[in-house]
Length: 199
Length: 199
Ligand SMILES: [Zn+2]
Ligand SMILES: [Zn+2]
Image (tube, rainbow over all chains, first blue to last red; front, side, top):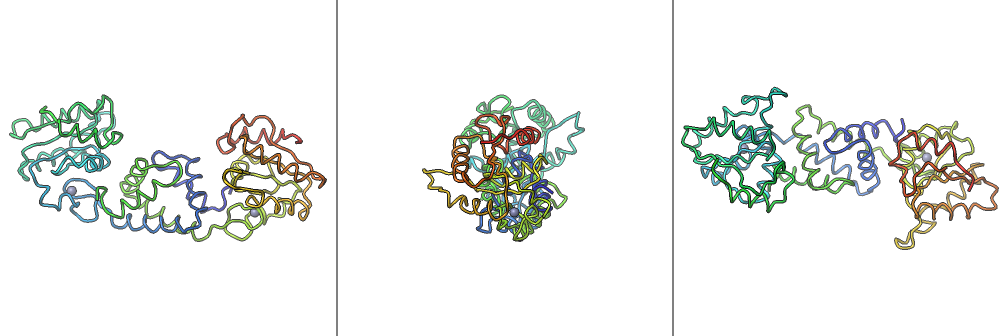
């Protein structure tokens, strides 16, 4: 046992497995938390326990909130006939920070991938098509990453919605080629949304 | 409130303040924890609460453990007359991973810095000199970073120990110029320790 105690070592190992971290950054994080004598680690632990207990996926859109319906799905003012399809909750958050979109979302949770055996059902695309009819959607905005996978998925959804009468749009140029939404600044993402084009 | 709930947003803000993280990586970490339906966040919260409650600084060496004396200071086999001085607990951990050193440590908690008003007292250097006498130390190994600040501090300590009869050594070449111990692989640090030289 090198790092202080078995618990400290277990904590480092758990933190090292989080995305973007590794053993070295995990050690630095744990030391910083132990060193700050303000009870910061206890506070963080408390907050994590609360979030773990209360967070759940919205049964309608896949966003994360504290009830069966997320705040956006629960808000009748967001039922404006626009439905924005995103790969990930992080992308939804990025769009919300941009404050340019006032409709509702549909979180796919990924992209189509033959290799990883992710098909339309895994992404909830049949459910998306159902929502378009049930919720009286007039425009579906495909706000997918400008990657090969994102654009393949966007084309698949656009074709699946053909003949339903709904307008299908994608984000305008402004999203750089190969760019991932969650990396863009909030202004770029809002500009791309406002200049969205018909697919 | 963009990110799911006020608690999620507060959690992201706290995590974003940790060393090496920022808002974007904090959002990714929190989403990953919420998404893993294995109760990983609750587990992590529990572990953090335990570590926060039990961790404390060793009253003798400044290492982190769960009692007044850390496991190294509590282990009589580590009283071999060698005392290794490090800047930080992370450096102590790096040396322990290397398994080359079997003596005890003294954690300074930083380096001398006129700018930041860190003098010998803040670093516990008088206490270090006291330990050399009380604990019958025959060799003090200054395992400080190969930075200007680390080497200035090493020279200060070497001079302060002059006339006490103790042998003062530093890590051998092998630590690259400007290199920080905690970034080195475990093999390099062990080799540098074994080839340590008299200052
Ligand atoms: Zn929702
Ligand atoms: Zn100790």
